[in-house]
Amino acid sequence: MKSVSQTRLHVVDALRGFAIVSIMLLHNLEHFDFYFQPSGLPDWMQSLDKVIWDSLFFLFAGKSYAIFAILFGLTFYIQSERQAQMGKNFSGRFAWRMLLLLGFGILNSAFYQGDILTLYAIIGILLIPFYHLPTKWVFTFALILMLQPFEWISFFQALQHPETPVSDPVSWTYFGRMESYITGSSFIATVAGNLSNGKYAVILWTWENGRVLQTLSLFLFGMLAGRKHIFDLNQTSTHFWKKAFGLAALAFLPLYYFKTNTANFTSSEAILRPLQTLLTSWTNMAFLGVLLASFVLLFKQKTTQKLLKGFSPIGRMSLSNYIFQSILGSFIYYGFGLGMYKYTGATYSLLIGLLLAILQGIFSSWWMKNNKQGPLETLWHKATWMNFANDQK
Image (cartoon, rainbow, N blue to C red; front, side, top):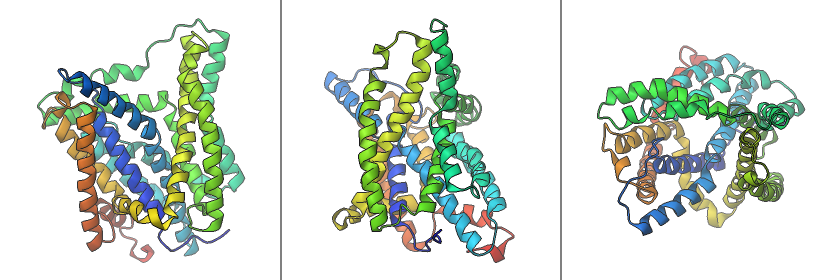
């Protein structure tokens, strides 16, 4: 096995920044998890809103977070390998690091209930036992998790009893309670609602949509990407990404067709529910492959690399930017702040998101010229290695 490179993977920084920006755009369209269609918009604006909504969700929904998850697993591998090369075991430190991330996630959840940091912190702990397993076993586990075994169980049960009545997902009940605190003027009530009702809603939604198993699967695939050095800029990785692009594109087309036409094949809601979860998950992963391969291959070209490197400063301080966007977004859209959810459809929300992305890009570029890490990244790093000065890199 090749040793982990000590050279910074700039394509990974740029990818992470791209994911942050695309996540921000989606969050703005969603009013940071508070879906609300303002009244009184002209017909042409409503039509434009629909085109923008459909286009951005087609491009990024379920994919941006997945990029983040793959890079999370990759980062775990790089950190673990660097410590192993110095004769140190990173497992205990990583567990402590995940506890710290959980704290950041709770802070973020106070502003935005859809936070993914708490999920990553909890599931991330499971990476530790996989680190020493052979590649073939890690790949097998990752593949099984990606196949969503629980949804298959539900699907086969539904085939035996297709007329079984299916109730609404439990998460809908909790999401339905959001209005009482998101639209109100009390910041304290919003925080309390996000940290209680909001977290229940998101946890349930995450499980109902297969994201728990999918997230661990993506972590493991990211770790394998580190083992295989597929983000290194060399001929071997170029061949891999070209092949990955072709296979992902071929898989996406039939999956997308069946995903969008599932209801034509059966009228049983009991069958449709798990089948749609499966097809949505796999369709997103196929398109994720197209996005990842396209980005990496374009990054290898000098003509486009400079443009894509513009995402790098944002990616290098992704934790800070992710939490900063939640704070800014909740103030812009929620009732305790500007309450813009009442006035902005997808078009206006996209413009706000683009403006915030530009501002974060400017701030990140300025900050990284004078610092090695983002503000919260610095805090996270120092807390990770506290009282272990001899172990610091």
